[in-house]
Image (cartoon, rainbow, N blue to C red):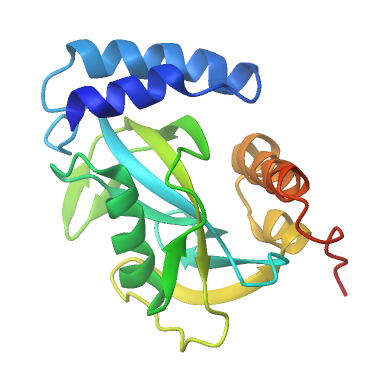
Length: 201
């Protein structure tokens, strides 16, 4: 699976310069770094995130992250798992409580290298490091009951596409990630001729 993941990242077509440059670094680290799928690698390790949309594709599911004090996407560490789509699906369920969640595509939806400042977690200091992140486009049932994961977040809610960007208090994510994901979602819909552009109320 590790070699398969490297091949998928090689075949992935970057959306912009951020993805192009980050993909270069990601491939270099995957090819040479030890334990890159484990958080035991304190410099950089693999994570998976999800842009979770509802059935109408006009809302995004987000959680209020306790460490970053911001509404953010869902996702988490690979922790040894090489199937990053499976990681994204698992984390969405654990972090939001939704039961009905599925991939709209098994392909990588976006990729980014994320910086993580040093912080305390479960009473232990975690040094600053990089998350080598793959993002997947998932769909969840809006009617599913939502629940928090108390040790990680203090809220879970659906936001309109633009509301999701505004809800973040992290400038880099607002500018480089969430806006990009919404644009990619619009293009994904257009490529598949899936109805008109959603209008937020």
